[in-house]
Image 1 (cartoon, rainbow, N blue to C red):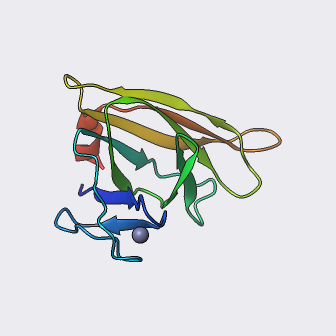
Image 2: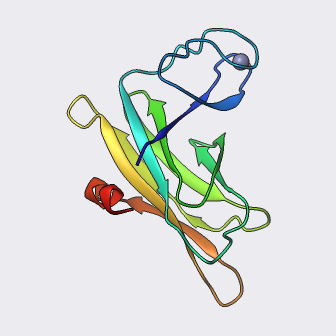
Length: 136
Ligand SMILES: [Zn+2]
């Protein structure tokens, strides 16, 4: 499974999928200056619940666009601890995940899935075994 590189422009805040050779923001043409220290992979598990539409992604409170069903994103981030939060429409319920990137652990694999509740669905973000990606 190929991950899409998901980036946020530091100048205009535009969120886009790019390839690794893209150096400038597709929206404002300013340099993206991507963090090269680490990255977080986020996979959305296939589900019957809320299958239509993307799930909104928030990293440290900043919107990072949406993730579609069975999509895999790679979000470049600097070393440190990052909060991954997902939300969709009126449903803001999510069990967030804190991910720490260090020189020893430069890549983190996470997944988001929807837990169906009695009144409302909620999202769960949790660590993922990267070996699972080969089975998707
Ligand atoms: Zn821009």
